[in-house]
Image 1 (tube, rainbow, N blue to C red):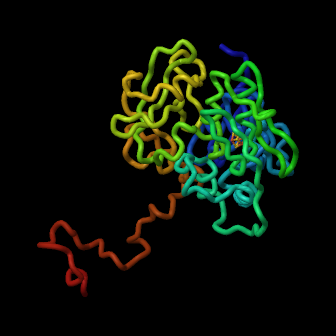
Image 2 (cartoon, rainbow, N blue to C red; image 1 turned 90 degrees about the horizontal axis):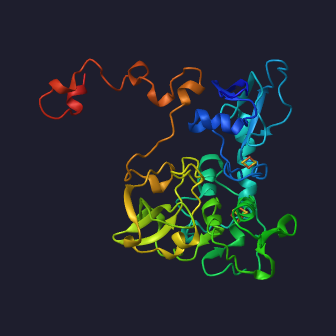
Image 3 (cartoon, rainbow, N blue to C red; image 1 turned 180 degrees about the vertical axis):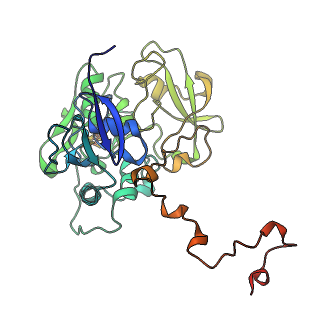
Length: 366
Ligand code: SF4
Ligand code: FES
C-alpha cells in the first residue's frame, strides 16, 4: 500500500478523497460530470502541460482544515494541488462562471469563426467550450491575426489562425519524437507554432499532434474536407504494428476508412492501450493503413464526448453524470418540479387511461 496520505476535498458540495499531490482538476475529474472544469491546455498524458489557457479556473473558498482562509484569487485547477479539508467552487461560483466567459471571449478574439468549413467541427473543444461557457456576442471589432503559411509536410495541415497556443503539440513533439523541430516562435499576438526553416515533421509519432490539438489548428491532410466527422462511424480496430500499440479508432463510411485516430477517453485525451501505456499511434497506422482489410475490426467505438458526434448512434454512449441535484445541496433541478403543485393547467384527478378515445379540450372543460 502506498504511504501517500489521503486528502478530503469538497468540490461543488461533493466530497472526494484523493492522494496528496493530486490537482484540483484531477480530483474534480474523479467526481465527473459538470463538476470537472473544462481544460483546453492541460493534458494528463503530457508532462508539463497546463497553466496556459485559464479555462480551468476555480474558486477556493476554504484553503484547508488547518488554514481555512479562502484563496484571494481564482486559481488554475490544473496547476493547484489539493489540501486536506479544501473546499472548491466550480459551477456553483458566479465569479468562476463570469471569469470563464471572459476567458472564452479572449480565446475567440483571434480564433476565426470558420466552424462550417473546419475539419475539427463536431469534436472541437473550443466549440464545446463556447457553447457551454461563452457569450453569444463579440465586442471585438479589429482585424484578426494572420500568418504566413507553413508547410508541415504531407500529412499534417497547420491553420495557425485557429491555434490557441495551448502548447500541447509542442509537448507532444518534445516527448514523443527523437528530435524536436517544432516549437513556439515569437511573443504576444505574433506567437506561433512553427517549424524551424519549415522543416518537415518526419518523426514516426508526430501525427499525434493532431489528436492532442483541442481545435482545428492541426488536422489530418489525408482526411481534410473528405467528410463531416458526424457522418462517419467510429469503430475500434487493431493491427500488428512494430512501432506502436496498433490500437486505433477507424472513422468509416460504408467500407471506406476515412480517418484513423488514437482512441480517446471521456476527457478527449488519448486512452491507455491494452499494454498499459498511453495509446499513441504511429504515422503508418494513422496515415497509411486506409483499407478496412488492414485492420481487425473489434466493434463500435465508445464515444463519450457530448458533442454532435455522440448523438445517439453509438453504443455505450457515456453521458456525463447528472450532478445538479448533489451540487445544489439536494434541491431538485427546476425541470423535475412537480407541475401539479404549481399549475392548474393539468387536472391530476382525471385518469387519462380511462378516457374513451383521445383526450380533448372537452374532457378538461369545467
Ligand atoms: S496547434 Fe493546436 S495543439 Fe498546438 S498550440 Fe496550437 S492549439 Fe495547441
Ligand atoms: S487547463 Fe488549466 S490553465 Fe489550461
